[in-house]
Image (cartoon, rainbow, N blue to C red; front, top):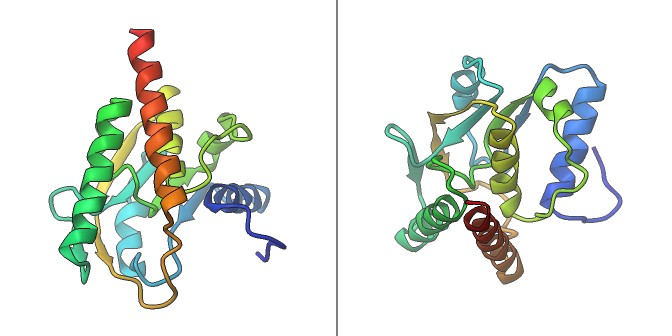
Length: 175
């Protein structure tokens, strides 16, 4: 799929979901094409029947290869913060290696998603858990990318931090 302009990670995922659903696929796999999500881990994700399966770096059996300690700490802190603010008990909320059922994606109102960067993963998890869908994590080996460069910017980090904070305050107010 070739998109005419960059519109953010979230819109790219949504375009991919739409394409897959229209093509008749029952399950849609989301993974990075830079070599960090190993194809050999895919059978573990697809063997699960949950409507959402997350390939997790941070559950027992999961691992990160060739990442400096600083990068691991940033990821672990980001996941801890997102979990603390949203109340979601998922170890790898920011993971991009996922399998969604088309039926679940069709049932969600996705056109009003707020996040466009890495907060998209957290927001999708919030949405699916808010409708009562089961989410499971499967351990994977995450490998530092083989090609390309990170698209992580200060703006993307701020967006994710701000949205998780906002969702956390909304959650506290509703109590």
